Image (cartoon, rainbow, N blue to C red; front, top):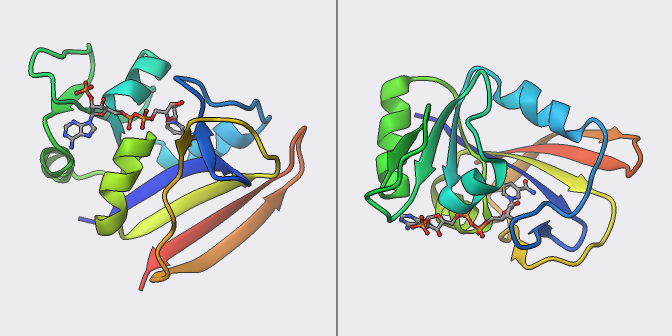
Amino acid sequence: MKLAMIAAQSENRVIGNGPDIPWKVKGEQALFREITMNGTLIMGRKTFDAIGRPLPGRETIIVTRNPGFHAEGCLTADSLDTAIGLASEIGKPTFVAGGGELYSLAMPMADALHLTTIHTSVEGDVFFPEVPEDFKLQRETGFESNINYTYRYYERS
Ligand SMILES: NC(=O)c1ccc[n+]([C@@H]2O[C@H](COP(=O)([O-])OP(=O)(O)OC[C@H]3O[C@@H](n4cnc5c(N)ncnc54)[C@H](OP(=O)(O)O)[C@@H]3O)[C@@H](O)[C@H]2O)c1
């Protein structure tokens, strides 16, 4: 199964500040929606808590060490490997959707990366990991908005 990651980072690689994403950029969430629609999202429990609900039109698998964790309309997994196994049974395009801990776990095994860079520097305490050199840029699109942003799609060679 092909595993993709999807993230938005600032120019200084911040992806979060506490539970929050520290920017509001018009259009950027629509891009996330378009790319992930009808797929499966794998996310860490903290990211799920920040969103608070399964996103419509997508399966959600929450990775947690807490065996008692349950969220309506979502599957839970005790590891990223378990989550990938569940996702491959579901058989839809699968995206690791954060946060920082999950991106770091997934980076060594991901086949593709959808990475949006928001053209601003912000303070935060959660960062996107370094993109390994074997991820090769396939496509790049610039968007103008209240803060300009650039979407880049990479595949592992
Ligand atoms: N900019 C973006 O694109 C983007 C996307 C998503 C999230 N975010 C931001 O990222 C931040 C959250 O990221 P985070 O790194 O703090 O947390 P996270 O990766 O969302 O979730 C961490 C949690 O995942 C579970 N987990 C992690 N490793 C595990 C493992 N090996 N086995 C089983 N469970 C494991 C644990 O849950 P338990 O504690 O329940 O065991 C852990 O507390 C927020 O600020 C959020 O807004 C940004």
